[in-house]
Image 1 (cartoon, rainbow, N blue to C red):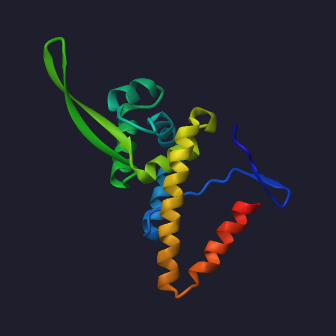
Image 2: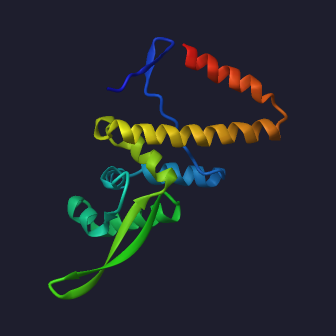
Length: 164
């Protein structure tokens, strides 16, 4: 289902890591995600679309301490990898507030990187590629304008890649 791009006799998964603009946040984002098995396990357990409840994460990741899970969830919210919210539910006649997390635009890219590709539907990949193409097109236009580069050159490069 997923083809590997061939380049200079090495096969690559054509993945682009999106990072925050500020370099200090780039470093912090990468080290927060890749420096801990807890962090990776959390992102692997987050739904790509929709809410993932904190209580479900704690239960699923019971081999990690609750304190570590909550610590990384807070870090991911601070770094805008996840957004959080609460909702009121009634269980056995009692009202409770439960916390949930959803990936941000940036968070979706890290989840796509970390989870096995087989876990995503073709529609998930299509939506991700569409978002990526829109982001890169806007970025290329802005950079060409900022650095007085010929936008038509990049249009030609893109069209040549499509023809191959």
